[in-house]
Structure formats: structure tokens, C-alpha cells
Image (cartoon, rainbow, N blue to C red; front, side):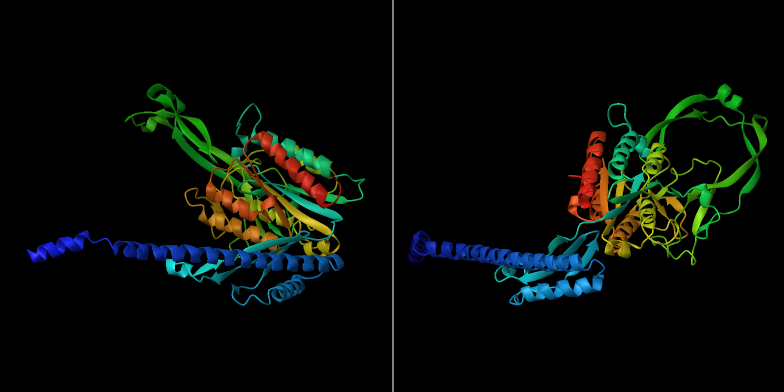
Length: 477
């Protein structure tokens, strides 16, 4: 009985309970205070890194204002020296080397690194990221070359609202841009090129025989084709419709439902036909080794394609010109073809801006920039990649696995930016998150990415880009 009474007294004793509760709450309280300290330190060092990166960018901009022909190695050395000297007392943090890219008249800087935590490591967070970006602008461009890379795949025939298709809205928007920017009498020279694309690009039939182009000889093909007579279908089958389409465009196609009935030998007929396969200016990507490169045409030419129909691929490209009528006529002739492969449009956009064949510019990108000029690409697309090229360059359909095409898109975007070309991106009505992210990353900066969800917005976006390009070369407000 004494044992039972002792147990009951112990159970009723509350004098030590508050101490236990306090002990249980103390550790979370310490962690909360510690987390606050770590967050405060992180904010402090983040500001220091941002300030150092901004100052390094300004130093690079000042240098380029005096010497626009300075190479990237010189700018890298200058930037990293300024950055390190500004952060001389920041031994507590760990930073990688500053990455510097040059895009038009802009210097883009980024640095990655971490800060060790004092308390948050107790909660499984040993470090905090210090990734930081900065941009500096220098000079006032005295001239510009702009390549408009325009998606003209079949989805551009879609009418989202009203009576105007996406392609009609694009014609109108780009036409206004050309009229606004190209003025032969202006003190500032602006040239523009038009690169329509879908799965292929059309370089024009007048390029046949060029050293960089390999077009197979025309081919005459005689075939015997046997098929069931149309009258048999009419007499024995029911006409039905089914869903069909291409490039995410839904169409309705007619077909026959004949049940289990099969045609006999007497129901067949054969005809002999002659078909002429010819080159109509359409070209496909090169093999893997050269697919995403401009140049090296002596090592591998660009392969032309034979077809029965001159309308197989996109409208012919318009090389760089300062005569407004030239791109204006090309825009009027835009027609929708096939499916989407974005890298083929981008590599031809880059080819419009280099000093080498197929359509050599007067100056290389670096030389043009050293003279105070900028070279830009404006990419417009309304959908994800639905095609990709195999190792031989032939574009094949693989809409269920766009990984190769998406990787190629990332690669060519990076190549273009590394070359010093500024990229504006117009993403029209794209509901695929992966494609939207790829296109946003493709743009030279966040301010160069323009989403649009209607034809009216599409036109407004091109107005905004026109104004930005105009400001860059000081020809408009």
C-alpha cells in the first residue's frame, strides 16, 4: 500500500513539469534565433556580392566606352580584378570565378557560390546560395543588323479569336517593325533579314551551285502504282471522318469504313506515273558534327532537298538589307508549312549575321561591335519542338520525345549569345512549360523575353521590341 501511495504522490507532483516543457521548447527557440542570424548574414553578404558585381560591370562598361574592340579575355581579367578587390574582406564566403558574357552593347555578369551557416546546419542546411547576376550597358550603337527568325509552321494558321490568324497578325506586326526601323535617309543605318522556318529553311533556288550548298541532281522517277478502284469503295463502303492533323493543328479527314469486306483482284487497277523530283531551295540540317555551327562549309556542305512540290518548306529567306521593300515583300509572302524545329531557324538567323557564307555580312560580329554596332536576333515561335534531326541531319518526327530538339535549342541559343549577338524572344500562346522555360532562357535577359497570348498582344510585343531596338540605336523615344 505504501508503494501505491508513493506512486500516486509522484504522479500528482507538477513541480518539475515546467522545467521539462522549457527544455523541450528551448532547442526550437535557439534554432529560430540562429536561423534569423544566418538569414541576416546571408542578406548582408548577398548585398556585398551584388555591389561588387555591379561595380565590376561598371568598370567593364567604362573600359569598353574607350575601347569597344576590347576582347572578352581582357574584359574578364578587368571584371574579376575589380570584383576580387571589392570583396577583399569577404573570406567567410566561398565564390566561384565571375562568368562574363557580352551581348550587343551589354555586359552580363554572374557569380555562383555559397555561405556556410552557423545554426541552420543543425536543421540540415549547411550552406546558403549566393548566386548573383548583374548587367552593364555601354556606348550608344551607331548601326544595327537584325535577323527576324519567324516560326511559320502549320500551327500559325490557327485563328485564336476573330477572323485573323496568327500568321496574319505576324505579317502585320513585323511589317510595321520594318517600316519603323528601316529608313535609308536616317543617320543611323539599320539592316534587317527575314528567316521564316518550320522544320526546314528555304534558301532560294538562286543559290543552287553555291560552294556551301549540296543539292542532289534532279530525279525523274517512273512508278507503277496499283490501288483499289474508287468505284469499289463507293459501292461497298461507308464514308466516315476521323481526326487528323499536324503541328498541333487538329483537322478532320475523310476515309472509308468497309467492315470485314475485302476487294478482289478485279477491283484493283494500276497506273504508270512519272514524277519529277527537283530542288526548290529547301535545305535540311547538317550532320551532328556541324549541325549547330555557322561556317566550316568546306568540311561539310549544307544539304539541299529534292521534292515534288515547290511549296514543301518555308517561304525563301530574305538576306540582310537596308531597303524596306525587300523584307516587306518577304513578309507578305509568308506561308505556313509543316512542323516546328526551332534550332534550324536560329542557326540560319546566326548565318545572316556572320561574315562568312552563305550570306556574308560586311563585318564579323566582333568587328561590327568594335565599330559601335549591334547585331540582334528576334525569334518568334508559337509552339514546342515537334521534330528533331537524326545524326545524318534528316529531320524526323518524334513528337513524343522532344529532348534532342530541346537540347539543340539550348545549345544554339548559348552559341549565339556567346558570339555577342543579342536575342529577343517572342513566345506566342505556348502552354508547354518546358518550351516556355527554354525560350525564356534563350533570351539575352529577362527584359528581352516577351510572352503573348493573343494576336493583339503579339502586335503589342513587336511594337515594344521595335521601340527598344529604336532606343538602342537612338532613332526613337
